[in-house]
Every structure is written in C-alpha cells, then in structure tokens.
Image (cartoon, rainbow, N blue to C red):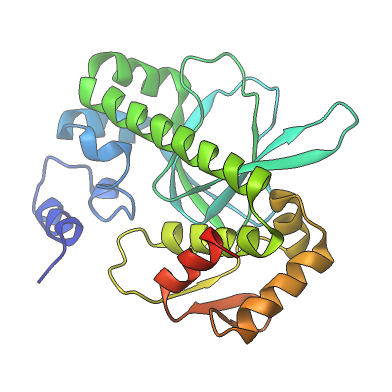
Length: 247
C-alpha cells in the first residue's frame, strides 16, 4: 500500500499546473511547499534555486542579514551560536524538510552549517514573506515548525541539565534515528552519524573521550551496532529510547 506522500507525488506527476521542478521534490509534501497552491508554487519556483553544501560549509552566518531562506531537501544542518570569545556552540539540528531561516527578522542570531552533504531549495526573503502574508496555511505550517522546535529545545534542556552521560548519548542517537527518516514505520534504524565526535561532545556538553566510552557501552549492551565509527544500526528503537530515559 503506498504511503500518503507517494500518492501525492504520483498525483503531482500528472498535474500540469505544478511546476516540473516541484513534482519530484524530496520534501515537496512534508515541507512548507505542501501548503501552497499550484499558482503559489509557480511563483515561488520562478525565484527558487537549488544549492548544495559540503560538510562544515556555512549556509547562514550568525549576526548577518539573511537575504534568502530555504527548505532543506536532504542532509543535516547544525545551528550554532558564537560566544563573545569566539567559541562556537551547537544549539540545534535541522533535518529535511525543515524551513531554514527566520522570516521578518532583519538578521539571523543563529548561524547554520552543513553537518553532512546538504541540499537546499532557497528563495528570496521578500518572496517567501509575501507568500506568508497571503497564505494562512503557509503561516500555520511555519508556526507549527516553530512550536515543534520550541518543544524539542525544552526537551533538550532537560537532556543537558539532568541526564547522565550515558542517557545523553542515547538521547542523541535516538534524536538522529527518529529525525533522519521521520516516516519510518520499522522499529529498527540505520544511519550515518551526521556529527563528528568532537561536535557530538560539543552538542552534549561532554568530552570526546566520554562520548566514545558511552558509545562503546551502548554497543556492548547490544543497544546499537557501530560500523566504521560512523555507521549506526539500531536493532530496537524503543530500547534505545528507554536507554535515553533512564541510565
């Protein structure tokens, strides 16, 4: 039985009103564009461009004026804040089909860097802001994403403030497993770690050595399998979730 997204994509293929570039888009229906009419998609596509970024390449510089926003089509983006002494802290992660940027703000207070190879469909700030004003559904979708990010930020505050090192690492792996492919129905998961060990340590407030020890602990317990230091297999997502809830 086809999943809803597949059905909608097949319908798009035969819908001549939907721009060609949008019909096979990886994030077309799950992202912000799923709220737009064919006419609005046509308008947006006239100003849109696809961009690719390599790991560690900057998408948005912190404290600068953003002239373009975008929808993440694939890959993982890390959000960062700069401290006064130049140190950088990872404060969040974004995945496809998240919206990248903050409409109606003059400048971005958070920087964005590619954690993996990333593809983004970007469009001028003025174009998307005009569409938001004229499309309640688009405004609602962006509002939903903002509230989702707020809820996840609060959960992550709990992780950083109250959980043990073992729980933090398990919570991080569960976060990646459930966001890389959010429509997965399988109780197992396989993914490549999107962050280097140093970045994981930074994100969790741990040392690199502690992260490595806890990954080894989870592997020996059979909660995860790790291949080539980056490939992770999770035989049972519920067991991983429980490991992040109680060490």
